[in-house]
Amino acid sequence: MRLQRLKQLKTGIAASLYFKYGAVLLLVILSTLLVACSSSPPTNTNLGNPQVTVTINLGQTNASPTPPLPAYTCGAWVTNATPGYNTDAVVNVYAKFVQNINNNPVGVNNANGQATVLWPGGGTSTVTATTTSDGLAIFPVSLKAAPYAVGKLVLVTVSFTSPDGHTCTVAQDQAAFFTPVIASPVASPTKNPKTGTPGTVVPVPTTPPGGLIPTSTPPH
Image (cartoon, rainbow, N blue to C red; front, side, top):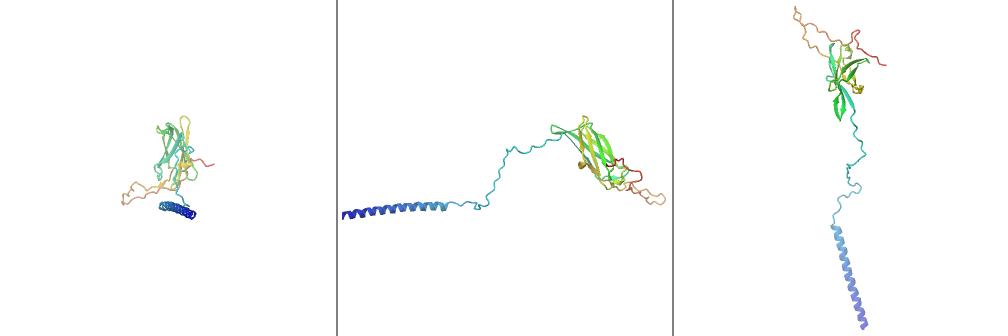
């Protein structure tokens, strides 16, 4: 009888311990679920398109360096690209020859310059000039013998040679250019002393008269 009561007592103690352990385990599981549910979800839920970030590296050493300025440069231009044509018309072509000294452009003084005028049809003529202290040269191009150039493009290339032998050329792809146009007469018409009516104004010819052609070198 006593042995039976002892056995029942042990069974009750074991059941009580199982109940306590089960309660503690249940409490731990509930706490874990509560913490997991209260955590905020990630803002970026699209895993297929992650956010792009840009990184700028200022310490790169494999970039191409800035090329240095040429030792000598030159250019040519006109101030009026559509001069009026007449037999006394002259188009001034401006050109400059400069040297790079400590990354500063300095005019080449007393350099010999030659301008080559490329007339429509293939003819050429040349004009020479000498640069001033700022490297500027002015080449006067006469239109007297070129009535056929009216309405057509005229190109002017330039080459320079400095006193110490350095050269620079304004090639055809960078040439100065102009197109002569027919200008309206400026002078007032004369009057007939008997009738008082205006006299006839002689128009400017648009075709070359016989024998009037520029000094030219035929293309080879």
